[in-house]
Length: 257
Picture 1 (cartoon, rainbow, N blue to C red):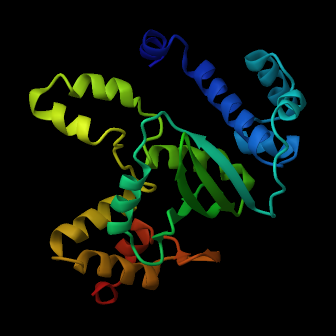
Picture 2: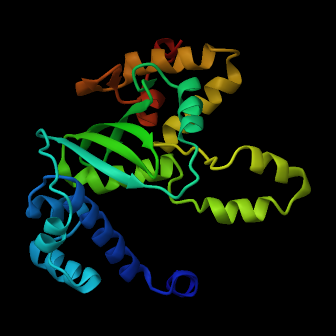
């Protein structure tokens, strides 16, 4: 793995992980009102000293200097964080909203007024996020039980919306294919929708294949109401976490019908 990463991106796993933590910390410094110690914890640093040393090494500036150079962050309610997720243009955000809206499991996710909301099962607790596409970025409003999950939640949302894709490289490649060229030109900025939870993706895919029409979504919503954990506080119509695979596997068969 070390040889592969060094060949592809020029650094090894430890250096890459450090750079990712530093970038997450910079986003939090510039877009939230979290205290410096909270930023260090949320970005995955083991100590404030390690955080300060890494930020100085990567950005040649202290965390305080990075925050002062940015616009003053808005105050955040306890447990809520608003983060700007950068994206390369072109970016067809509305197409993603249509995709997720057509497949939304009631209670777990919804699309309303240009925002996609869903629950998140995270390592240290439950969470919810609202994702609103804008020009050049996606506004992410997180509500988390534990601040240590913020970096993980950001990573999942970037993967969910395919925000790290290079649309120009994709376009250059696909326009070289005669069958794809006109399609790519007609729909620039399309992304490949991801998933917030692999177990949820697998079960919902099977249900949609086995049950016709809207039956798969109806069954997924029923399983969520019966076996999913309630969120500490709802976010719009999002009220539950999708049930764990282990919970469903251990449930009596009669309860799954």
